[in-house]
Image 1 (cartoon, rainbow over the protein chains, first blue to last red):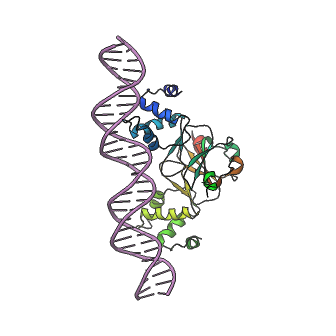
Image 2 (image 1 turned 180 degrees about the vertical axis):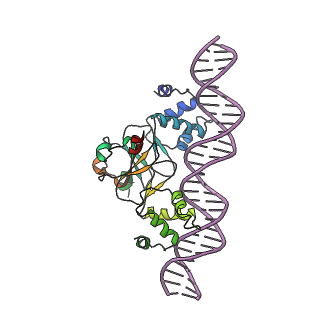
Image 3 (image 1 turned 45 degrees about the vertical axis):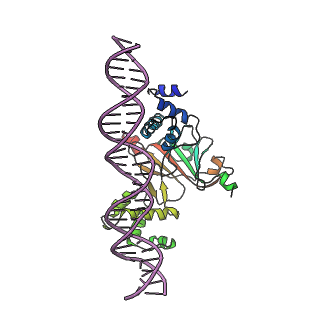
Amino acid sequence: MVVDKLKKLGLKLTPQRLAIVSLLQGNTRHPSAEEIYNELKPQYPSLSLATVYNTVEVLVRSGELREIMIAADRRHFDPNVTPHGHFLCRSCKSLQDLDARPLEIETLFDLKGYLAEDYALYIYGICQKCLEGE
Amino acid sequence: MVVDKLKKLGLKLTPQRLAIVSLLQGNTRHPSAEEIYNELKPQYPSLSLATVYNTVEVLVRSGELREIMIAADRRHFDPNVTPHGHFLCRSCKSLQDLDARPLEIETLFDLKGYLAEDYALYIYGICQKCLEGE
DNA sequence: TGGCAAGATTATAATGATTATAAAATAAAA
DNA sequence: TTTTATTTTATAATCATTATAATCTTGCCA
């Protein structure tokens, strides 16, 4: 639950945080900070972009939120922190989850001597919709 | 050869471009645009950062150079465009190549209906040196 | 409950990477 | 050479993100 998630992190329960965490909960749209801000602003007119950045920063640090750096111009966020890749369509620019069996990092690479803590897999191409629609 | 690479792309052979492409040739340090600029500035005092950005842009577009978005604060570049991953050490911040057997994208993921043209694999953790030295 | 202190929010400014602009320079073709 | 399209350059503009500092709130405790 949203409240538990914040409490677990020792964070105060503010309306802004509750709204941000609620919006992210189960969200598969991979919003940017600004998109989160724009979606919540109508209901929370006092909301500041800085608060969105602060909150996602805390969530990413604590492992509750995943940062997606598939595109150079802005970061996106994904509340699904289980291992999975992301697909960026160069036609429609959509950013989609790639549900996958977990990637076996250790067997894929010769990581002798390295400690691999996390990974990101980004795939670029043309998505289903764009392939059909053309 | 450097000259051929530029000619193949239909680009004029300017000293700046030759210098940038030469610096990148075989370079495994994954420099940022600013690092390229700083390394060349002493020998090419007239060099502008804009020229570095213009040149890497052309090279990336043409597939001669790979853009690395492993860190959110700046882009890095890699002249090795054969499939391989990258490792970012959270201790010493070094960015290293992960020589790997090619990743079998199609078998890893259910990409039915998607056209995968390219991918990036980033691994985060602690590198050999930092593990030993501590 | 009311007051307090730590932490949060806000508006705003600052930062810093990247991109745009437009004038001056130059490579390459005739 | 002359010419022209391209390139370089200095500089300004853009835009995402971070820092700042004043104001406000949550959560705790008397």
